[in-house]
Image (tube, rainbow, N blue to C red; front, side, top):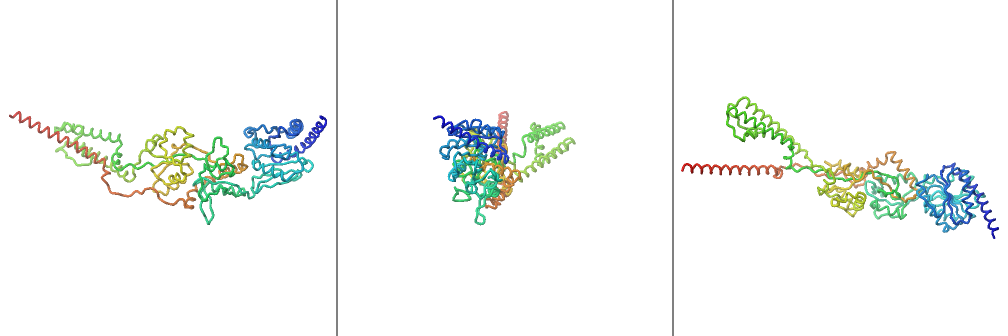
Length: 603
């Protein structure tokens, strides 16, 4: 019983060894076309070929001796994230003992797991079946394309005689290609240079200015940074986008965050919408934009007209002026007293002539005033001219250009001001989830669940609210505010939640289109086209009819002075009237008490 089995094993070893020589020659030619640094061998643990034919000195040792590259041997029960440990220049050789793919389901899944993020690397299937079957080949290649394994070569058991190999191309439709070792054609051509009219399923999402859609001559035109990227991507690689989830209105799109689900369930290959990636950033392309996420706050309001009178004098300047008046009053009163003039005690604190002169009013000079007194009077007149001119010039400038309220210095100031910040629910959840310290400012946000309402509020320029804003949109707002007579909003760097956020396109994790998209993103950034498209968004929105050259800022018109403008003047007048009335009453009471006392003494 053992003799037939031993003979069969020997025959298998001899056949596989001979086949191994052809495989070595093929791999050597592949390396000449494009260098590889690692070799991965995979087979089922329960394959019918004896283990020594695969793991011994037959194939693995021959490959290492002839090709001088490291060789890894795995089966269907073992899978690693090889991308983290080895270079993507890898060639995989997979042994299939039969043509029934269901028997190798575990091995094929392990293959995809091992080639995670490297599915464009080269794979060779060694099939121990013959002859070649077109139906079997189509099933293998269709399964490979479904698993996004692009560069696949199939060798049947008779390949050493026929020198024939089979490969496939998914562009524009999946078809089988046949070649021979002796052919001068490249064994693994670069499929990602030309997609040959392939129709790639996608979904478009986001809002302006990233994607701007409008009808032009009866056709939908896509502009903005994403729209221009779509156009360049299709023209460079010769393919076209199709939308299996085409909305009823081709110019209205879902939010970017909601397009990720269509990619994850494999409805589309890639989403033409920009959103921030997860951590780790698997399932997203290289960042197409890097932006800051900040607050767009209203420009500080003008102070109210009544406050003009109080803001002209700074407290320090007012105290200096007051002490100067007291000093000059004391000097004038002392000089008059020394020259024999009658001086009231309160004149030493604030002399009437000094106060009138500083206020620009006329005052009575004492008769036959000495030279020193006249010099003090002249000093009072000069001081009055200076202070009056100073006050009037400042007050006039306030009427021309009103001073602003104090700016916000921190989130606490913003929270205390009761200004509401409009936020979309998913973005607010992202903010609170990543920055827990903002939970204490929860009441500061007005969270809007409807995306359309949030966009409407943000684009309304309503200065009663602040808005969460990214730098790409802010570039459009900056250009739009140049049309206004005065800006309504500003975005400060010290009110940014996150800086340099990478925004990429959602894509299937193992998509074969990751590399072309990466190449195109880098080329566009290097040529400056990405920045140019960002800066052109405002003019494109004008052309699309979404924006207009309108001044949305409130117009400043001349109006006559009103009673409310003199609010603090009336307060001062009322205070002085009350004070003078009290003094008058005290004088009356004092006078009557004095007369009553004199009457008693006379009686």
